[in-house]
Length: 313
Image 1 (cartoon, rainbow, N blue to C red):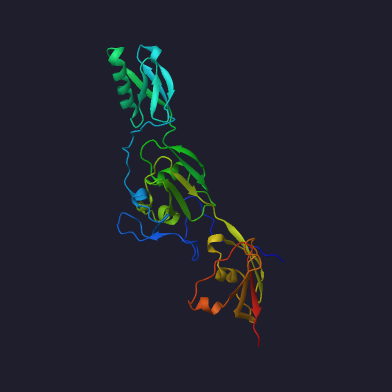
Image 2 (image 1 turned 60 degrees about the horizontal axis):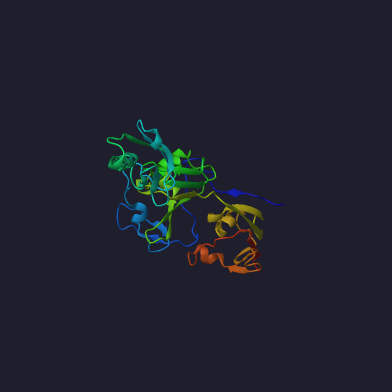
């Protein structure tokens, strides 16, 4: 009979999470030399300056800076011929009647209005009253993906931290995994990834993980992923079990099968790989080596078959 058992935690928004299992794919881990950095942070690829993620915010709260693709409503008091709805071009400029291109990229709306007024005063108007309303905030956006209540593209209107973004999105979903990823482009053009443990951020509340976000960031919250493992042979409860992918180890699979029976051989365990790339591969495991600490636990993969041979008496 096929037996399915789910091993893991269902995680509510801002729920309890545990550290990843031993045997997870290798990731660069850096020991924090500065107390402003969290311990054992993981950034890929190697060589990325940690201040790319853990540096201070570069924007004053409430000061939105105009950029490409923003849509502006430009109004000149009592001079309706200058009123326009315009989109900021890729080079940061807008085009207005008579005065032509005006560079507004990097300015806040008040500064941009003052620059337009200066252009008008040069030839056309003695004391123009210019106002700018940002109709669409398109230049400074970031994406939130994955297991959150409201995944979407969010406008970055001033300072916003990781916790503030998650709160605005309604928190992480019940099927959220144990980490989230922040993708950000470094100054040398490389795409960098920071691994943020949700337990440290949401449960323990370590403020060092609550980093400031930047335009074009991508925040991804991967869902928990379960895989099926078969445990057969000389165990108490042979069957098919579901385990969290990141925690799917040989020891946990044997625990679900209620361990070896009295005829099971600790030195006679085989793991058969059935995935496409390693179909037919058989790993021979001496369980005594794992129990004694001579070798690490074995991370299992989708479709693995664990077979416990019987002892020869």
